Image (cartoon, rainbow, N blue to C red; front, side):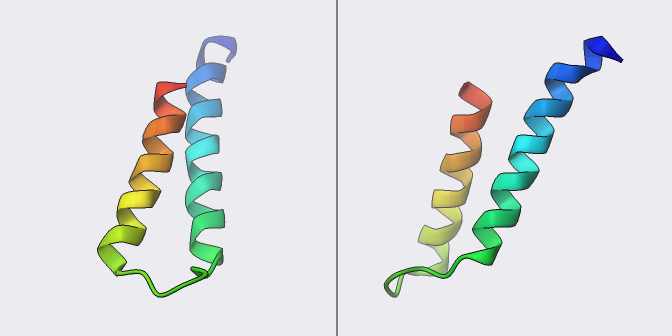
Length: 49
């Protein structure tokens, strides 16, 4: 189980990011494409870290 701890932590963090992102509302009107690009950017930052 210990060797799966790192990938599980990364997956859990990505799932939390998507969950909290879906619960928030943008502060100003932003296109849907821009919202999704910000989500993907956040997920990529997690993967790079």
